[in-house]
Image (cartoon, rainbow, N blue to C red; front, side):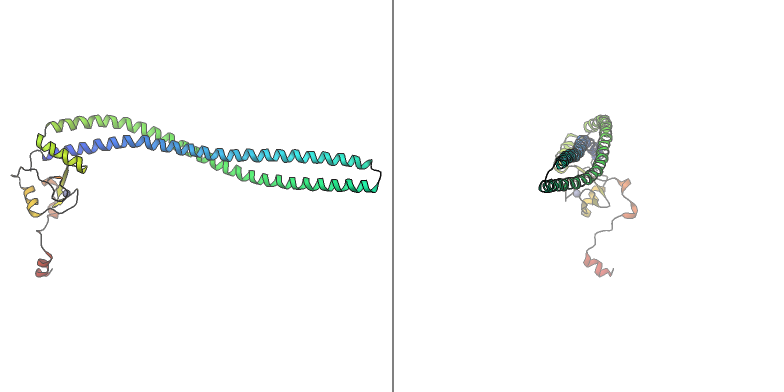
Length: 258
Ligand SMILES: [Zn+2]
């Protein structure tokens, strides 16, 4: 194991933690503004319903005014009829009254239909109010949570950056630049080798590489031959129950009869 192996592993932990903290701090304001937009959208949907309710009310006011006009006209015609002098005139006034009464009946039907629509719209308005309240509450709660999390992350990030700087200062220049190069390309520079596997890419290490890695006298930085990450081996984490059996070909297994 290279003398800086463990420090590089620690550096990677700090790098990943710093990245997680930064990603979270960047993502939270976006989440909050999405929730704000969602709350605004519910207010917009409610405004459409409120507008439709107002239109129905205006429509009914016109219908009622029309009905009153026609009722007054009927009263006028009836007064004229009282003064009529011939059966023809009486007949003509009767026709006019019947016609006006027919129009009043259609207006009353239309008014009933409008009231039914208003009832339905009031139900929608009630649901829209609930949706607005829920969306605004969610926005307020998440905004507060985001503010608190960002403040905590800032403190945590300063701590992680300090630890990161300390561990970087203790790592040799060559090992550090190699780690940085791999980390930039792969996202992570180190991978723990456990039970003969690279835990980053899950590929099995060749027995020779595995033996080199476990050799205490070997001070080289070894990389995974599949993903290219630097390998770290911790004997304390290598479970004795799961010791890897030596590689055996399928042919050999068949010969052995297993
Ligand atoms: Zn690998």
